[in-house]
Image (cartoon, rainbow, N blue to C red; front, side, top):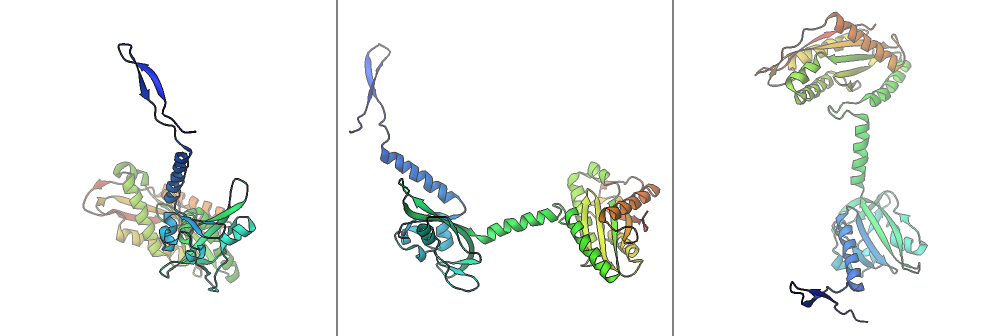
Length: 346
């Protein structure tokens, strides 16, 4: 039955009836086109590559990401066998990997590409990929093809690496955080026990840091912490650890200590480095550092015990030698820093 235009009786201002033509109802072909267009736009907008095949493994669709990754245009390979565009090898053996579309169709199940697989692009370049393939069914449940979804491994690996980095590092300074410090401490003390050495913790606090934030702003305070972290890192050995413990507090862990005065000499080294380099350009200020020291195993065995003792030593020194409030102002000179260190634990 044909779709005829419908007329609705209306009246003008004088009451004279007239008819208005209503728009025709959308046909089933119109609805199908809209649905296909919606699916096409959606698939072209996602980051993963998508290729679909018919039951014989011939390409029926590729989205833009699939064209970019394989180097083939859909118009060139439509109707050609899937392996024309999806040439995948085992990165180690260099043998051709199993066809995931064929496996999905034959087994009527979702399959994943073997690990360590690389896609050979049209120009011969190789890219590591991860993928999965699933069968496509018609309304009667019969398998009519397969859809393959894949992406560049480096993107997912980059996300994993970034998450791992953030889990163990301070976001502002890039130094290790408390979690990473605990892991390093366990390893360092295990070696110390084996070789009859010591491990020292230096609890470093930047005096009057709140005044810097209140007077110069949080941006200057953040930059001050970043610069201080770089100075601390420049003073230690590769085997040592610098951690941002929180706020303006830092912990320096000295591993594999042979000489008993090594922690004191390191504290003095920090003092000289900060005094010589300054911490901020374009500002004049007087700042001080307080340092408390605890040593494994003389002052304790566990990390928390040693941190508490180093922290107590630092605050004992801070109270005994409380510095005057710094004079902070804008100026051409650099921030000067003076370090007073507490060279023994409580």
